[in-house]
Picture 1 (tube, rainbow, N blue to C red):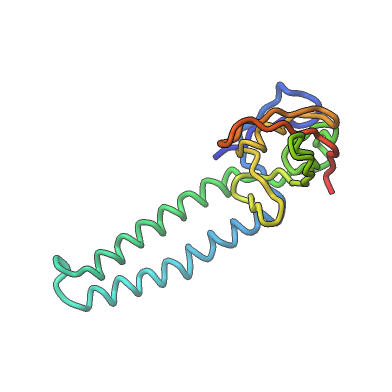
Picture 2 (cartoon, rainbow, N blue to C red):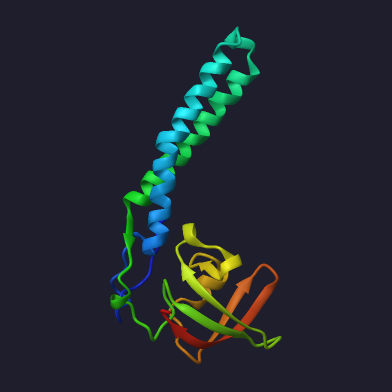
Length: 171
């Protein structure tokens, strides 16, 4: 789940790190803490209650609780890895002349003339409902490194779409 992008003007200094906004990284840390404390305590309680219901070899509730515990621990491990490699991005180090992580980019679909504005973020922060798209999404990948005025030809499941880069900012 590493995010690859460039800092400043150099394309040669790629780093395999998870980059986040301050708020995005804090949200993941909060989720991790919640799962490690309350989540594990709730799961232990569910397993104990299921165990009290009798023979474990034929106890569907116990099996379900153990499966849920496995999913919980898997999510905790994922979050530990992401948060452990997580870094907050210093916007002052980013090149505002090119689309990159944390950029707000206004684009125009050249086929239907529709304009939209997105912020490119790490995969874990993406939320299309509020205009945040992952830099790993087809559109995110297609926009990375482009400058204002450039045309990005992006392959999406429905085919190829041409977008013109209208604006790039960090606000």
